[in-house]
Each structure stands twice: as C-alpha cells, then as structure tokens.
Length: 174
Image 1 (cartoon, one colour):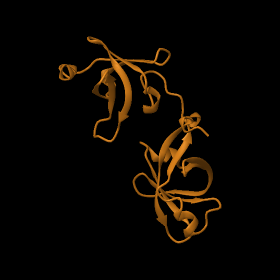
Image 2 (tube, rainbow, N blue to C red):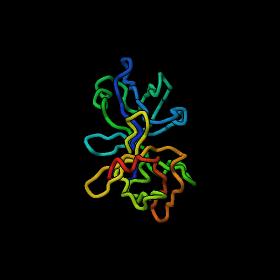
Image 3 (tube, helix red, strand yellow):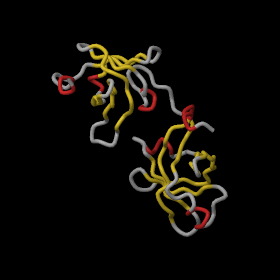
Image 4 (cartoon, rainbow, N blue to C red):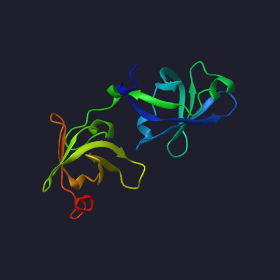
C-alpha cells in the first residue's frame, strides 16, 4: 500500500492495563468523530497493516483506550507501542469552498492580491499556536498564517490559493 493514499491519524503511545489494550493518541481537532472507528492502519516496520478494532473508548483529551482484534496480551501489544496510525484518504469527507485539509494544499501556488505569485506551499506547520503555510520561493521560506479572513479563494482545479498577506508581512521576506 502506498502511504500517499493515507493520512496520519495519530500514534499508539503506551499500553493500558494487562490484557493488551493500547492508548491511541489522535492528532485531530475533534476526537468524537472517531468514536465509531472499526479499523485502522498501523505502520509496522514501514508497512501499513490493517487492524480491526474490537473496542474503543474515549479517554482523556485526544486519547482513547483501544483493544485490537487478535492482540490480547502485553507482549503482542508492546510491539505496537510508538507506531503511527493511518486511515485512507478516501475516508475523509470532501471539503468545498475555502476549507481544506493541510495535506491537500501541498504543492499549491500562493498568489497574493497585491504582490502576485509568492511561491509554492511546501508544508503546513501546525505545531505552533497558529498554523502556518510554509511557502517556498526559490531558496526563501515564507510563513503565512492560516486564518480564514486572509484566504480569499481556493482553486482546487488550478491548484492555487489566493490570499492577502497582512500589511508589512511579505515585506519582511524581501
């Protein structure tokens, strides 16, 4: 299976109890959307392996306690700790308008209302208080805050994001 057909869901962080249950950390905005999850792909030595979920109960924050089918003891479960969790991209609901998934806009051209073409979206940094587009312009990296009011239009067909940089921000990169 090609990993590019999947999206990162989270990680198995630790064991829970002594019957082989695991704690999943979900790297999502709303964990309740995954309450009914019945299967997940786990990265085992670089391969995405499907596992059926027997039982999933939401825990604290963005974690859930999970029992995986055919994993019933600590030794089997321990081998999965620190593994990454994935789901197929096809399971994501389609977004329209100016709403987008971060993975979706990688490679899009960014065009500012005043300055014109700024560069290409290289990645999204969501590890900061404010999620940022990392736009590559030649050898320069330009950071752009992902704020609804600053995104004018998303053209999925042409792979272009039309934005307006806050006054003076783009000047910092000149």
